[in-house]
Amino acid sequence: MKSYDLSLKPPYNFALSAGFVLSFRSGQKEAEPVLRQGVRVEGKPVVIEIRPAGGPASRVVISSSPPRPASKLVPIARWVLSEDLDLRPFYRLAQKHKVLGPLTRKLWGLKATRPASLLEMATLVITEQQISLAAARSIQDRIIRRFGNEVEGTWVFPEAEVLADASLRDLRRCGLSGRKAEYIRDFSRRALSGEMDLEGLKKRPDDEVRRALLEIRGWGPWSTEYFLIRGLARPDALPADDLGIRTIVGKYLGRGQRVTSAQVERLLEPLRPFRGVAAFYLLAHHMLGREN
DNA sequence: TACCAGGTAAAAA
DNA sequence: TTTTTACATGGT
Image (cartoon, rainbow, N blue to C red; front, side, top):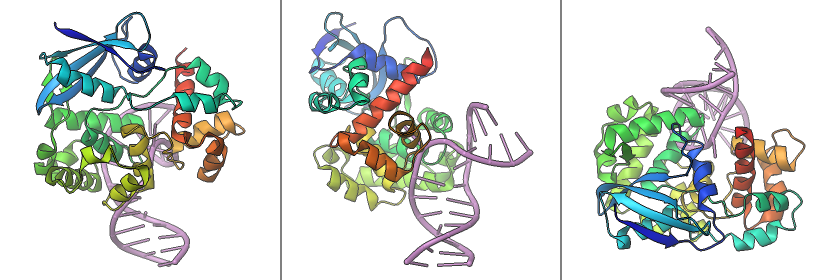
């Protein structure tokens, strides 16, 4: 299979980052972390494979099935691996912090991966509202199997058109509430018509993205912040009312108990403008610790 | 079995 | 205006 070398801008540790995301996915644990991601290249479903290149931690090898030219795969890989997030200023700031300092040295080069499709991210955000991550994962899985395409065992998220045309009945059958089915279909319709310019969001400042999302039905503060940090890797975006974040911030920066969203804001204030990344590092440290 | 889980809109007070 | 309530599935 044709494969291409790619050097990501350091600091970046692919094996650590891929290992982290793979620890959430059920199934086989391989000796070498291989990230398989369903993506679309000019609308066609493709599975892209990213693995360590050996040598520097920031170097990877990418390939795809069916094969696609490097000019198509490389930008997708850069996006999925969040290359645009520069960790250096975060690390400089964290060094002065009692908790984040040692923790960042331990997790040096860690970044979250993100879906290639912002529509997939938006759907995931809506699905995850209120219910547990396990429940949401199972619903998202049904959505992708019902409406997406399979490539060699990996499922590729559907295009906006498919979800825009879906019946509420079929969406609900995936386990979504009636409301969420409407939110997802409405959002897909906006994406399809261009009323919501998803690609355009990538270049717009945080506050403009917030305004654009908050005016859409189904998008409250939590969903908007979550989309910013997870979907766009905006380093300061912080869903302070998120249960997971309130728990983890209380554990690492408070007295151990879950704290209020106001306390989350206060405790992470020294990490501005990297509060979202800081919260991610706390969460990652907690999750990786639990595995052992 | 009941209750909570990485919320939100809409109804009721 | 502020406060309740309905909603979906999975884990404990």
